[in-house]
Length: 238
Length: 291
Image (cartoon, rainbow over all chains, first blue to last red; front, side, top):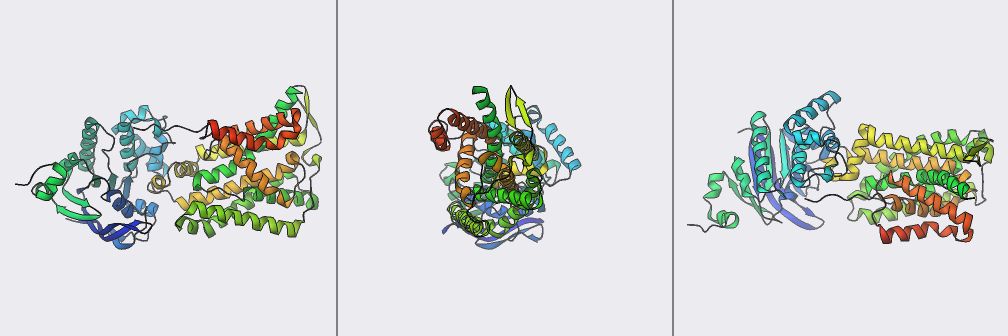
């Protein structure tokens, strides 16, 4: 497996409060990785550290051969790492403006092509192109978040709880779309989730608990792990 | 009397919108209250005063000169100080102290260089004609100043809604993290916003002698308070809401001056209290749908 993202010995937190301890996470090219963890486990903090939205206390982040530690968030984005936060969209901008912001650093022609491509994939968004992002329903907002994050044709899409606030039907829709997107392109995924439904699309899984990676392996290995089964599937180990 | 009051309130209100819009732009992008806003306006006023008295340059031209100079000064101030403030533990509080310090320094230096003597620009500097509006006569300086204010506000609208930098500015206003993680260089956008914010203040400064009368180095703090009231009325963080705030302030102020002049100075504080009590998000404050 060719490595796309390699984050090692990640230590960070907020103010003087340490949240993550020596985390290591690897995402290969065209690989779909799920970072599983309960509320407060540190998933968002880890994604924010990778994106440069919070300062890294120590550790290294290498993406496609380049060190990202000293790069600003926008520079990391331009390297090919796109990020979809839990909110996913900018509420005060229209749907179309959100998409244009997603492709902000593309040239005008590429931006227009990508916009049309997104409208083809998400016809609902085209209908609501003039509506404010904040006026959309939870499901539509997630779709806009995904489309916005894909506007720049990233190599890696980092997603923070894409299922948050969605009904099971919409969760399935998001999962189907992600499967389709990754199969059509060489897009890699790093998805932080507490919804085990996302394991359906995972090539590999990390489990984050109390700021530490406690498990890393395939879905089959995860399911065979008694401790993880108890924590996330509510099953007793045999 | 009523028609005159309404029209003069609108003309004054347009100027007030220009006076507050830069403060709101900076707050919207950086979440900092620029306590030196009125002092930058005062510098613009003195710039126009000296340009007119020493070189005969029209205050209308000074508006443009002030804006160019202040965009550069704003960007320099941003890059020299703001990234350091943002790295601190409490950037909002530190920014208040920082801009208060800047305000004090500008005022003290202005007293040294300009002295405390009130100055004014001749009313005829922007034209000597009288305009008839709805049967009421208004000095050309008021009408031209209001028109320049409208042009500046339209340019702000054009910048925010029809330029790539404007989209980016509104994205940063919406969410700094979302904007940065969409590939926007937040520092570059913020430096522009700081420059444009100060430029708009200095543009209003060049027109202020016609609406506010004499100018002095210590006029800044009152103007900051008034501007703050104006942007709270419209909506904090929404630059175009400032136009509503400015018009309401201008009309209220003119009505008070016409009918209860001794209470006129209370207008900004009364409006501030009313809006905070009944619509704290401002008249154009938006509600975001939560899933």
